[in-house]
Image (cartoon, rainbow, N blue to C red):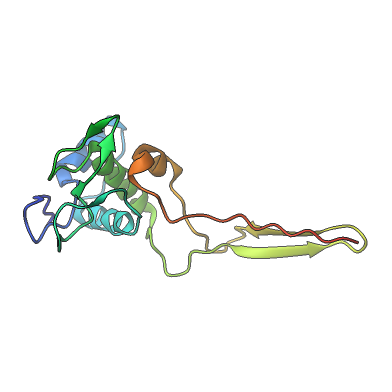
Length: 160
């Protein structure tokens, strides 16, 4: 059962089934019969993000609602979940139709090639390997509300 009431200790979702159905209908996306599990998978992903501000109340079940959030120069009212967060959950729920958003092995395989006397190249490949999914549209929508999971760029240089 999906519970979106921010005052409930059993709250388990920001978006309800009607939100997801409306999101999908506007985009001509066909949803499966059971959509609650998609919302919960999306919720699991969102709960792993680093959010701006601080929880509105101690011991609340989810990261939102939050205090100290400024959107476009205006402070978000207490107890409110921004529309961007609800929409992001719907976007992720649609992505969850293709599989798990949080697989236990998500890093891309690394492939190395070395050409004697020239250069060594190391890069990630997806030759049937498992990779870490990213959702740039979701992160763009959330903007400064979420810091994401971070990223790193590794480079190596060798002198011949």
